[in-house]
Length: 307
Image (cartoon, rainbow, N blue to C red; front, side, top):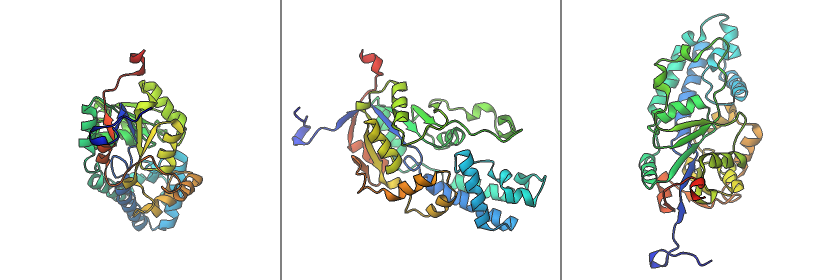
């Protein structure tokens, strides 16, 4: 087939009707938020409790592995060292300063990368569907979609379900606002089956099938070669590597490595693989907006509409 040419002899940009994008470190700087927040909380916990930081890190790691998230909101109540120090006490009240350190840093640092909102608006204005796919659990995703102003800039967001609440705790007991405050008004939030994870191509296939998207007209954007690029390749979807969000060389990475919920083999694989080993098809070097130069965004229609 002869390659279609744009004016002046340049190859025409590929037509895309669906953008599936990772969220953390692709649309916003998760690492730039998590490290000050978690690191500040950890430092305050160590100072206020007298428990060595190394001990707290090991206990956080075990909890994160158990609950499948590096953001487990009930960790302080479950840390064995703190429970042994203060049997029967309200650890949330006792270590309120550490919790406040986390929340203050999160409010200060949680923000979209420059140009992301404008780029998403441009893509959606063309009629293209925008879908978020993240491995962060539902509660944390919901909070960030609202806090970052992404409600309505994403048509759908897919995430794992919430982890179970500790025994005796109900959603109503931990909510600070009415239930309606926590609902997304325009973005549809759908939960993936427990255990579904990147880089499984079957998960991306299932998302595309559920929304009625043609994989040949979809692109997938993400900051991880081992998870995002490899998954897109395996699924037969055009891959876009958000190099600006790659975290191994970032401040705070060593702390993340010590407390992460990622399996050890996944951490090792992510550190081994570099662009030279798994060359992405497309690369966003410094900003999400570079996506606009790579593709022609066009109106989405479900596959059934083509029958």
